Length: 317
Image (cartoon, rainbow, N blue to C red; front, side, top):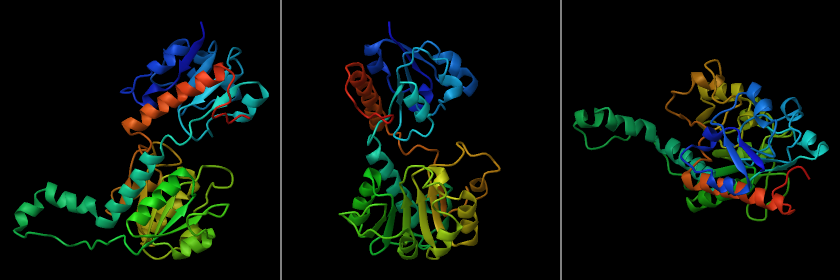
């Protein structure tokens, strides 16, 4: 019987059933797999499923039966695709499954930071509102989004969905991407940094996007700009971002992604995590229940397609 190994079910969520995979063979599930456990666990696998495990020459070479790797994600930088291509192992990702959820969190962060919901919520929750004797509180100052310029870095599915919501909130939208956009004005990264009141990042991590937002780009930004990273941690120079938050150059900062996850105590963001103008979330933007159900079903479709000779979501071709 065909053997399917799922290496890190906890990263997908143990509240979601993996039963759709059982239709294709014997399913072996591990909640988590350490790097030094991967080679042994996939040694006799025909199909490997993973979200975050790093699969490369060091652990793939001994998996002589391996035919297919299915990634529980859109990004596939944790897979040595070149090795897979050379050795006849197919690799599939899942495209577009998290568009609504990631864009929803991006906008939620923007709304929370612009309205200072952390501070106002704490004011009520800790009893200060009750003790004040006043019917309202209007400090710190908060702002409408209408009339602001929202810069989208990376106008793929997620970026365009954020753009549509931003436009509905009354923002002027500009985008930066390699090819002109037919829906919104396309500008250079420098112009976007100079013009935008809010900047959100939605690009994949690659050699060309690593460190895309660094000290130079931050220096171009408006004083008090809001920066939101919903892409990958390493598309920013995290130290430069933290310094700009501390200096006030960046007025509000939100991120769901980090170059190290979870980030350690010596990470630049650890020192700013409690600031009222900072909202950091634990890489959860992709993980609504509906999103993860869609992910599982799409992965199952990738397996089905591969087994009948169809090309679907292949990143190794």
